[in-house]
Image: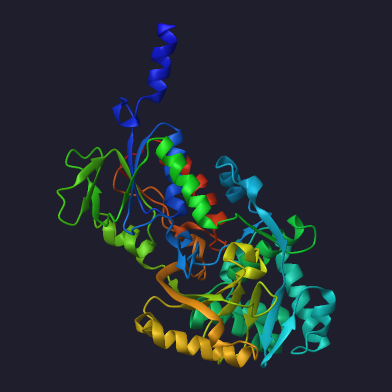
Length: 459
């Protein structure tokens, strides 16, 4: 009996009191950093997460919009999202996912058009029959490409124009690409659109021919609460409002020292930077010139995203793609076309994202000016929309959201291991030929684990 009690005490002993555990610091408390923290803690490491914001989640963080709490940016779970669903399963949340068949629309030449099946596609008025045929064949062809690496050598515009035709590119592809990438679409490779098409095709296959998207009731607030509880159960220390200023080798050269403003520094056996590539280069000034070049060369897109809580829905589509240049946002995401409105107190939640470069002047515009522009556009698009029905309007700004898949991108991806012993970099710049979403983020974390858990020596 005494031996059994001693064994139980050993299991329950706080992680900080156990000997011979590798101490790991993770800089960044988004889903990437938190997934890494969980997996490393499960393997027995003593993990500390440093997050500069007052809450966890990063791009998946939540906030208050009116009298409800929901995601700060729009997210969706696809039936094909195996990595994310695996994490949700570990958190006992996968069985709670509510699945919905959603719709997609286009707003073109001042009119809405449904795009939810072959008949809708054939009726799509902006294109003639030949254009539609070439567009459909482009999407089918892209969906069947198994290895996208050769696409990295071809510009996005050239590839789409060759397959779909110049008229289709000008009428459909270019406006959609500008909405997502701005003028940086000219720098992107064909692998960018391949990744989007393949993800949507995977969603349709997993949804038995229709777009079935899912969500966890409560949104990412539910996910983050469960994840934080699991982390704390494994002894992970979470430090919010902790802005790391510098990361470098420790004095003995065996570990890594993290320094915060006004701090003398704190030593860890290993450290992982999950912040955007330019920020990682800034924090780890001791990296080699080549490592810093790779990190700093990544071309990021940012986002200014408005959340609206409305008395009534705008329309019936989850996603409305926009091709009219006068509209000041990139798309209309009607979250309440996916999420049951009971989660929003019977109201409708809409996101109006605008993707822009990190130095775009829009980041400096005040909320009132953006709100006026966005609401004016909604009034023009939706004749039934009334400002009196807007219960809340909030704006999120993030300068580094995802790197643009430029030509030959995979040849210049930053390495996970660095020249600073036991310092690692894991961030979205290492998602090659994919689209930034929570599933890809979790997948990246799982893929990086092997390298993070092996001994590292200086190069």
